Image (tube, rainbow, N blue to C red; front, side, top):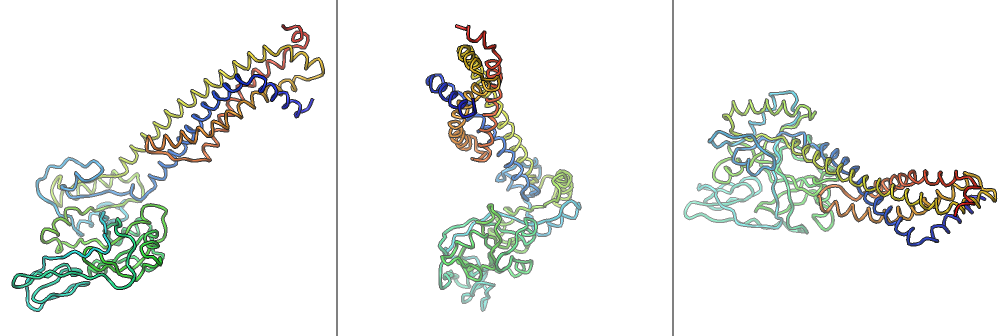
Length: 453
């Protein structure tokens, strides 16, 4: 006998009992599918947790005005002060309290609706008028930044900024951030075209934009953005740079200088800008977060009064989320492995009963010269064939289960490589369990097997 004949005999044995073989294959398929999906989920969850916690966002300490605490995603410290706090550029000096803080900057969420040309107002009356960067003065009034308005002398006027000439943006609205220049260094964002803005751009209050790589390539039809102007917020923003790709959220955002000078916090708009300002302090080593937060809390308590600001550490919630997801993935994997173990034991029992029913066939095989190894091969290949059929169906089931788990529990992702590894591991477990019945069948003495009825 050779391996080809062994395989042929095994296939005939599987086909000879179609119903039993089909049920065995389905049992193996369900167990393999669940286990492979569980292994893929556990592997991907661990990978996602590492990727998540490696983000610069989770080395930040966020300081916000007390009134802004309810809008923050993360829990804040209990507040006791009733005084309204306006955080300004001067508060970034809190970085000096510890050497663990490497960067200090602003990073506030915002948005831009391109092509929007609303009417601005709120200038001061005066003689002769004066225009700031990006705007024009109206008669008898003063235009604010970017031509935001000209209320003048007797009754005042409104001023409308016209869109720039030439090609217009093909995207109506984009999300963005108001940041200070150190944000780019902290997040290791470099310009692929043009440049990022510097401290001088904040001092000039010039409306400029830096675009993420994806936004820079799609904002205009021809894919060219640097040097062009876009109308938003009734101002003409000049695009000065496009960032290198990051493979993340930053690629689709637009960045503009944050207005943080204390003298700009005048009037209702300035007050709103002050209250929504978030100061961010980044450490080099996440192990320093707790110590740096405590030192910052002392600094702000002494500067603005106890409980005047909300201080939070995004990493705490991220670690809690990663830990919860890891525990959930472990439970799912444990249940899947339990199902696989039960299926493997059932398959083993069934093959034991098959071996008993085929003892006469075993005796005949040995009588015609088959060795123990050859008999073992026939029975093991039979189990392996059923396991292979179950594994093939289980692969498809694992893909469906992976998608279902991703959509249901909100984490994990379809990873074909991990699923293939899971299928192979599961199949190997089933195969190992079937070594025992194959060995039992192969060791039956020929004379005893032939007499078996």
